[in-house]
Amino acid sequence: MSRQPFDKERAKAFSETMMGVMNGGALALMCSLGHRTGLFDTMAGLAPAAVEDIAQAAELHPRYVKEWLAAMTMGGIVDHDVEHGTYHLPREHAGLLTRAAGPLNLTTYCQYIALLGQVEDDVVEVFKDGGGVPYEKFPKFTALMAESSGQRYERAMLDQIVPLLGGRETFEAGMDIADIGCGSGLALNLLAGAFPESRFTGYDFSEQSIAAAKTQAQASGIENVLFEVRDVAALGETDRFDLVTTFDAIHDQAKPRAVLENIFSALRPGGMYLCVEPKASSCLHENRDMAMAPFLYTISTMHCMTVSMAYGGPGLGTAWGEQMAVEWLGDAGFVDIETTGVRDDRANTYYISRKPA
Image 1: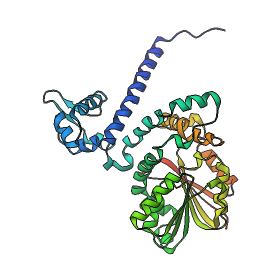
Image 2: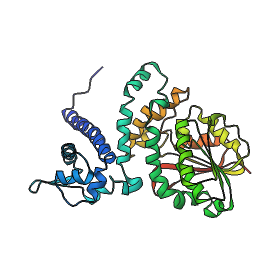
Image 3: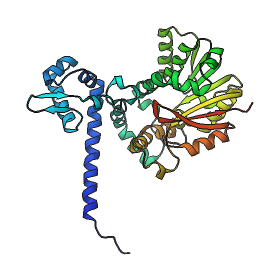
Image 4: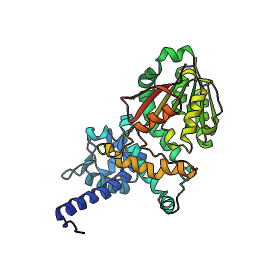
């Protein structure tokens, strides 16, 4: 068998690619630090400033701030004026790095790199033996999901998502609504607080998440919402709800088909189901042009897929994609399946379907 000649230029280009991978991974960790310490938020409100002034404003140790600023400068994230010895976060960069950016704040997602690194040893083992890494191995995941999804809900829920579901009038008329895999309850508490005429129920298998959801509801004085620890693959509800929602929950399930069938059963005839899932194609090659495709498949390998497999699931993966989602919704009995999106949630596809009347 003839071998292709060695392409030096391709090797050189790939070497540069790998250098970019290593630098990008390192900068992701540093951006996570900048987010968690509040440095990006602090610098967004400052004119060009010296290390000591930035550290004082952020109430942080100047030696650490200096080294962090060096990494930010080398990464082209922060501007450095050599003559005056100052550092500055450009407005154009701040719009993607600060809490004020809401769902556009990419540093929120940089935190996943450190989180997933904590389970690398566990993932290496399941590569060898199969199975998966269980949810309890990710103790910070609930809080991180609450932060990242909360940014989207605050911007999009009432003004962009509710109109897809019949509009404010429908909610104000009074409905029974369930959120399956509700996590910390951010979406449901937001809706329940806005529409006291409707009744809301949230289900999740995580006791930690349900406890957080209840605490938030109580703190906000919301009385028309109920949260329960429940295995949604055995939900056992029939003709109870007018609307059921799932937000980035189906692909994580150990029994995703059973969950969809239980949602179908739980809806009243003519009821609506909103299924929100990561935006992707089920065909790998069609995802090549996605800006964050490597990130998506990394999250899948080291969390979504492996958590499902830990409980005997199929491990659909984060990028199970539109074609498979539409097929499985149809298999579960849903009709009038539509796909859409919302402006402030660019990462997800919104599947809207109904149970036949």
